[in-house]
Image (tube, rainbow, N blue to C red; front, side, top):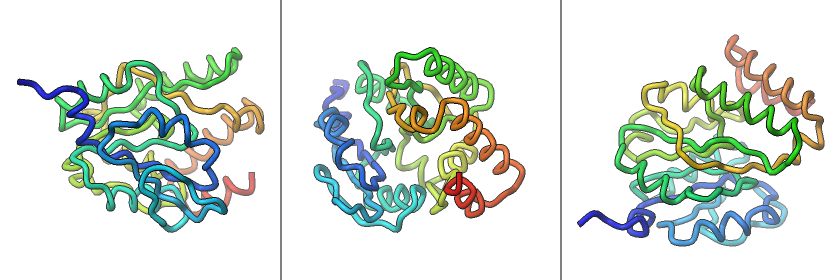
Amino acid sequence: MEPSCQEQKAKISVVIPTLNAAHLLPPLLAQLQGMGEVILADGGSAEPPKGGRVIQAPRGRGAQLAAGAAAARGEWLLFLHADTILAAGWAEALCAAMAQPGRAHYFRFALDDPSPQARRLEGAVAWRCRWLALPYGDQGLFLSRALYDAVGGFRPLPLMEDVDLVRRLGRARLAPLPARAITSAERWRRDGWWRRSARNLTTLSLYFCGVSPERLARFYARR
């Protein structure tokens, strides 16, 4: 008899890097009931997050993700950002993906904003994933522990840790999930749709030109 989706979910460790994100987490944590474990890899929040298994890690998303993965006990790993919620069908999509242990899977990108700017950005991200095979961390990443270990996992980079990992996975081992990860659009509304998108594109371009993640992190922080 094939295992049920609920039984499959018990094999999954969810890793969420956090930093002063306690106010963002409740909706996502409510969705993740039934997972094998939920690990909150915290980088030194003023108010420690509640829910799940909290571990302390050096500040920086790459270091936090790496620490969370090292602490995880599941056969499968799901990496998510704290300002994300998952749209209908996400659990079934994960369970189906577990039949492909040699591939890493990511959600379709969506924003919680009704504006035309949000739809244009979603379209641009879909193009980037389809033609450049570059999903970002805010789309989640779901893969077996065996595959994660085989490619070396997350490196403790201050920036571009997601791009670094998916490039090592390569196009042939990446697959989209038929469900969406809905990300908060607050950063784009705050910084300006075009300004933030241009900054992200500039940072990616500099990374591909060989600028170190440490220098990029300083550049990103200044902007």
